[in-house]
Image (cartoon, rainbow, N blue to C red; front, side, top):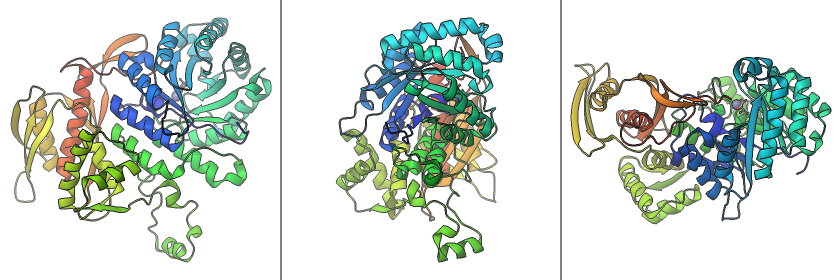
Length: 541
Ligand code: KIV
Ligand code: ZN
């Protein structure tokens, strides 16, 4: 690899998916992995196979299919996370092995606070465990990444020692995590420079940086690490992740691109796909993107002030440091309409990267026709919303069969819902609420009978115009505990789940989003059949 090439390591499906409410179904994870490959990421951290059999299976499918493209596109490395235990490493290997380029990523904490209080291990024991487990991982897989967890608060001299052992035992990438988002850019840059200068053997390895955003410095710290010689930033789409999140892929890629004369670094990312994948991840996780979020927020390229608009008309560069097209932000192409046929839809979806089975295409075509009756022109963004709403919903335990609302200023907002339950029985329920959405949610609650609180409700229009599709994302929290695997032990604790819905009627979209989140919760509780997923909320040794 040329020294100016930066490998983009995406951990949306692992560190991102660990954030509260970001749980994705296996089908959603697979679609995100495919989109990441199309985007051009070099390494996809597809999950934490030891967390549950479903996580292992999801990583395995991604390794087998996304890790072996048949269309001549670049082959991403598929990586699985493992604690430094034989059983975790075995599971990670089992999951990533089918990929053309598999990687095992193993980690152990090196800060005093983690070693004393969490691991209850001495420095010598940590060094020994790293020696043993990196050697073991390397005996299985040629590509091994090691991370000293909480490196940002670790003694640098101890880090040099641990990293040197990992290199001696065959690690090929050394990742330096600021696990709790504590460091400042100058400090983190100096830490990376110190590691590169003082760790024997490091010149033959890739140095990686993994920053969390607790002080809002994840991107600044990552860029400082790259400036100091790191060549692999670990990032997530929209910066999702534990607590305040991880470093956002789009911010690092666009900073390197926009300020190339400063960094002189290149990536393999096709930045025009950034907006699209940002929406995909937001829809699947139910985690809305804040409007003023850099690069992918709804207002990132909006200019309201008259003085700005005047400047832009005279010369775009007066107030724009990047073109919206460079991140795919202006892709509201008018593509299809009422008279477009099944073939036209299939071709358009193929050009957007969706290769649907015949039955899936039939399903989407029915929705497309219904939408085309209500909306004159259907854009790429509308199609993406339809696909998310129609194909990539969680297993439908309860489904919406009908909804009727009465609202306005003349009486009490009332909603009547007709829901099909997992046994196929139909339930009709009416409720009053503070508004039509509240009333619909109360009616759904009366049927589903699950105690949840609504943490977040976000609605926005997919495109402009009165006939636009409305997208709704919600996050709910279970009031009763949901069985969760927390590294060592299995516990019951409240968990959050996200849901997404799209429709030209926003009350219908709201009901669908709420049901999608409820269905995810019900699947996780295992109430209606075996639990599909018991994702870890927090990865600890
Ligand atoms: O933040 C962290 O330390 C991690 C490691 C597992 C790399 O996510
Ligand atoms: Zn992390």
